[in-house]
Amino acid sequence: DSPKKDELGPKVKTRDLVRILHGEGYSVPQITAALRINRTYGYALLKEYQPKKRERSDEAALRQKIQELCGEFPTNGYRRIRVWLYKRHQLRVNHKRVYRIMKELGLLTRSKGGTASRKKQSGRIPVTGSNQHFQVDMTKIWCGRDGWGYLFAVIDAYDKEIVGYSFSRFCRTDELLSAVNQALENRFPHGVKGRGLTIRSDNGCQMTSRRYVKALQDAGIKQERTGYNNPDADAYIERWFRTLKEETVWLQEYTTFLEAKKDIDRYIRFYNAERPHSALGYLSPKEFRQRFTSNAA
Image 1: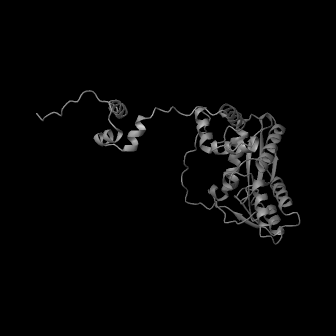
Image 2: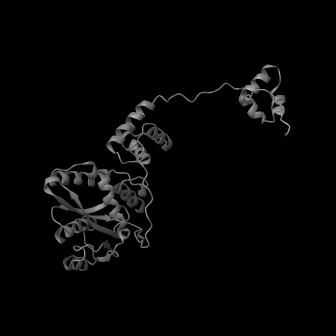
Image 3: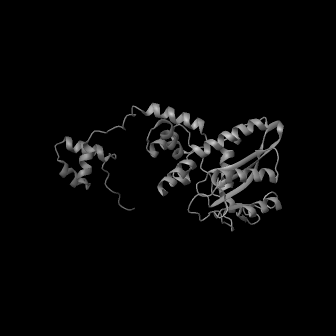
């Protein structure tokens, strides 16, 4: 049998041992040398235990505001809620504190899992300013007893603003042209010819119709079409459609087309003017564009 180590009695925590020895008259340098611990650590062990800081006086009010904002924006994470605290209440709060409170209240949104990598990826557009590259696409939205509604929308790839859209019970080239015309009137009130605008779309029947193609050619707009089975190529508008559905459409149960249209009109106004966008430094598209324009001036 191998020899056993000497038994020195029950184990004692280092803090308790330091306090016992100090109470018996030993100095801290003597104790730390004998126990082979850092002298500063030895002094720290003699201090009374400091409980966690008491709750800040504004904690209850802040928690209430965060709960209200999470109720209004249930899909927003802690970073965007932090921005809303400043926008709505002029409160500058550290993001770690917002994260802690939302975690304690069970309000953190579930992070989205990674997506499968595709071979064809050309969604990021090398633009350096607004009005260089637009993307247009269509999605359908259930409107209860009125059936499907069809939303054509145009987004600026640089500032992420929805510059034109058309929500209708029809899904024709007319509605597509209406959305594109609205975008051109908003951004090019004096004409688009010679401005170097490119509009990218998928290969839907409206986007490949002779009427649409000719309209772009006549306006001097370069048309780009994505490859088949390659949704990442128009990633900006596809991502916006998902945001729209996550933040309002899927949270509602529209009973009529008019009810859906009213909500979508409201959301687009809100998105352009107020909603913080992570890719824009948590500014809204209009705020970002105004800042860019003022800096350029």
